[in-house]
Length: 286
Image 1 (cartoon, rainbow, N blue to C red):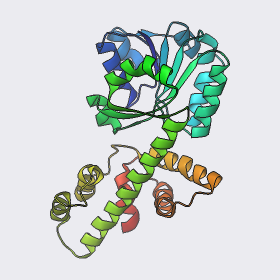
Image 2: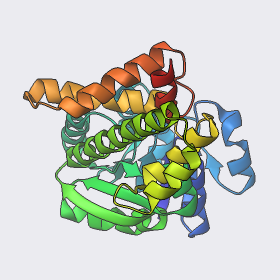
Image 3: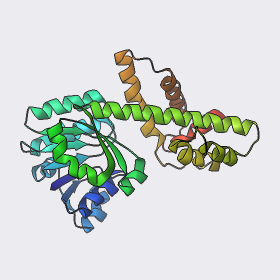
């Protein structure tokens, strides 16, 4: 397929390489063309604008930061909508607000262009290993058309429901992830207060019912006091802003998530937004 790709960061760069290696005709656009130099050297075409990228693509995949970024790429000046032919599809794998996904889907539908919100879980390692979990919000027919592409990028593809539903599932994912991460930080903080070996505590917990991927990966960073970014905390903070806004709008009580949200706010205030979210331990220590 003729694929366009935008978003060449920690997630996007390995993803676009997987698509290229699978034999798809991949073109890219980058806000900073120099960031695409390595991919161009590997045989991918660089286009001057999102509109140009869309004009030569059957499907364009985006992996960027926030709702406003996706809106600008889609319907801003020189955006994807200006180049898409009817029957084209925009697959957005960013984490954005469900309402934004629904709005973009409706605007594209007026032009005969398909939409899939397909946020992912698995982080940079999952992107590199092509083992991402993908949560899709779209109709069955559109998902069937892009499923071969998603299968190149992930191991589990679940159709959640109509446009916006994928983003709802991602909000739930982030809520569970960070809440468990906060619990891990509190457990490490308690163990440290008792003066026991944190590595031994973590090892014991991994063998019982408290075991989790969060304890395995981010718990290891806490034990080592290694807060270099695996996933930058500012991204989880952004995601929590989305889900807490949705909770307020819908009147849904989320007491545990609300506590984690305040800890993320404290983390950001401390200036650790570019560090790993395991820095929640440092919030407690402070």
